[in-house]
Image (tube, rainbow, N blue to C red; front, side, top):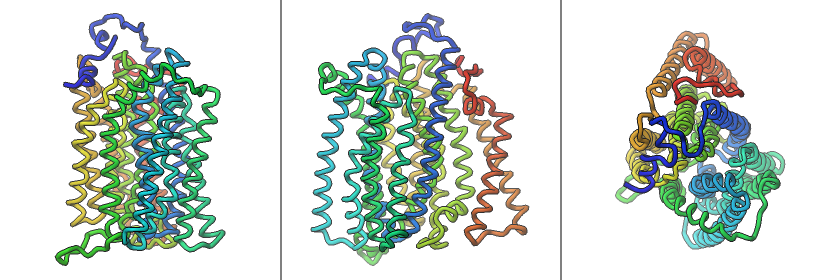
Length: 575
């Protein structure tokens, strides 16, 4: 058993004393304190979610414009592949491994020694900028050589051109994520949550300006959008740095910071391995499996035909943006807000478990109905967002089928984010890494097998199946690794999750009955306005039914999301 696993099995400090009635070593923690802390992070989650909601709504407008301009064919797939690359580095170094290792160390230093915290953050920022800056230059040279030397199809060449224009965004967005992590520790979530607004505004300006003002051809508009991504990276970095100006004093003196940096790097290593495998898998799926027909065509040796065509990348990208909407607004917002609190409560078992249970319950309270709802309205949603311009009704049908296959990722990823951060807060990055290393290849295998009969839908379904295995493994191991009589998934939490699932079934039954009753008065829509009307009716009805059910049977979760003053929560370990 690794050291990280032993720490979870035998928690540090007063984590082991609570159930024996002993006084915690770090001082008593009252139920009122726990309630206040828990309510504060739920308040942070609301702030993060509200700004993320605004960003995602603007992001939908951005995607609607870009997909309509570039289309769901080869050019749209080329842009989607190029945009995937800098986002991969953002998830790996910015919001993934670095944040997971940096935030707990920085949070502890801020509490104990603000001067040491400033030195540590200055050193980390310098190392990040130098490392990723060099990697960007190296990668840019390789892409330029590949575009010059390798005989590729025209859409594949366009993908490399767009990638070259976006590459400077890679280090910039990682620096922004680091600054955002520091802001989280200081209790400021608005700047980081609002930073994507800048990206969306810049990309909308580039797309709309190129297509409708300058009236450029689609490929030139795509290049202008790619340049606007880099401009947005500069603006995002300056935005977060400005919000930090009175909270952190940057310094060139880093004496004494190397020990904290070494601890961070040791923690970061397993996460880089885990997320690196995940992002490499994503790049393999995008740049090998999906990108294949763009670069080499569909004809295979032996007369076989490749199952994907040049529209696969654009279709997958469009569907991903839609399921990521509720995931980013609610699931990631909750996990982002709860992580600093879990890190501070790592030595307080009852407070830690209460916060974790609350995070699990809230993630599924929102994630389960969001999963069911987006699968139910998939076709109308895709039509409302994307239909028009260079996107046909057939393209919309493909997107909606893929979106249904992706739907399960909302609830599973929400739970994965919360449980993974729970392990990270205890200093254990190895166990989540091992689980990822086992489940990531499953997604590639599932997708590679299922794409032959199901095309791009098979790739989406493979991702959902792998995520379900990942979430199940994390939940089971969290139960096993946290010793004592109290466990994260206690009876109260399991019953609460069951009530949420029952509410989802009631919601779906109501929507199905309504569609059956209205099938003659309102047949399947064929126009944009018809899709929009049915989408509005069913979304409103679904939210109303689930909201009434929650008000009766899920009061605790509903209160956590709406109340600002701390309230005792029965059955959650006192907090």
